[in-house]
Length: 360
Image (cartoon, rainbow, N blue to C red; front, side):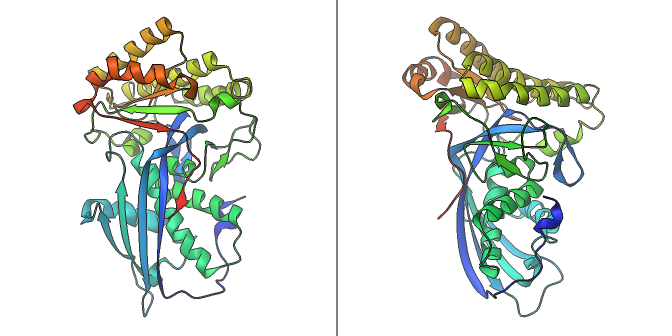
């Protein structure tokens, strides 16, 4: 498919007002996306577990205007309060999507949103937030075009979510999502995410993710800036090639349930992501001292316990602790005994892989 496939011709019905709510999860990348081209096209493919508990709930109320407006008309409430500093990002998203949602200037929207986790702390709040908003707007388009089928609805929602936040395209569905064209994955695309199309061993069912909140504050460097710094990065091409190769390796790993090799790729990808940040110009470090303490504790525990616990990181200080469900009891005890002390106010979130967004 090309972007032209997402431009509607005509709408068959009219809708004067309404309200829709979607709950959309965050996701945690196993092979990381870092660096992008024009129009939110990824510089390398990525694959992620869709989460379950960490989610954004967004309600969009809409009312048709008497005449089409010259600009987008919307109010934004975050946790019940007006959030003016979020509005520019929403405006940018609406500008990027207007070509594919030509009704946008014909309505006034009230967007009410809230997260189940701390905003801007490296748990991909933009992924859950933009995917939830994209789904709400797609629900209105489905009202205008009732003949739209479910597969196209999800694919276009992923396409639109990408225009708000690249990783958001991986949050529409679950539980294992791939985004970015890659020669060894059939139907993979830079325009939207697809459900991983190959065999996955049952050991990855209900995989657990405990998110250790090392630092709940906002990141000092946004992901958007970090992506931009890849354009002239001295190691960019090698990094992009590494991502392609790791995705190819994962095909066998997922099929056979090879957790030892899974751990190597997932942890290497996390450290490579932060290595690219540390070798950018300007360079920056998002990990905190407690991030490193947790990583070393995980390595020592894995060796002594012979479990398959591992870590990954997003663009932040928080640590995602990944492990199979059959090791949950041992890992919970380890987290409570040894890792909670490194979390801000002792806080962490217990999550697991989920099945994607849902309409409420």
